Length: 229
Image (cartoon, rainbow, N blue to C red; front, side, top):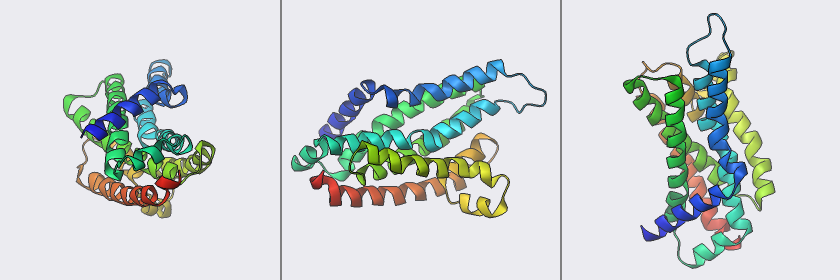
């Protein structure tokens, strides 16, 4: 617990010193607020911009951020020193994603306030957003762990983030793509934030499976590349 807490604090400090990552937690709710209050059109679905920006934030906005943070630890040899000191993969992972999930939940609460959700809607929203944020961070962390440096991490994470992030939008117009998208956590986020009356069981199950896959990938990469970082 002490090691995990130390990594948690380290990541918090690193985030505050990295405006490129910090802005990801600010820009999406800011855009949602601005569009919600400035765009007035007939037959516009309620909270369309809130749910749109929230889906993008949880589904793809943090993948690049997480990958560059991990890649920075590799590039600066921080990860190597931590592994030599005996830091286990789960300690590093929990310390890293723990802070980013917390930051993601705070951002999600801002989205909920902008959307003026009811209490029940807010609870569902926060659950699916927290799970989506965790999955995005895990995917980004795995990409970062497989990268040699921050430039490589960015080059890898951007197209992957675009694919998983925009696939739900494409799925709305293509049944074949929809079948593929249903196995992705981003599709499950999109489904729930657009209809809070739906059950959370399937979305959370699919998201949990995504989390399991990305966790295994991260641990494999950590053990394989950590000491070489």
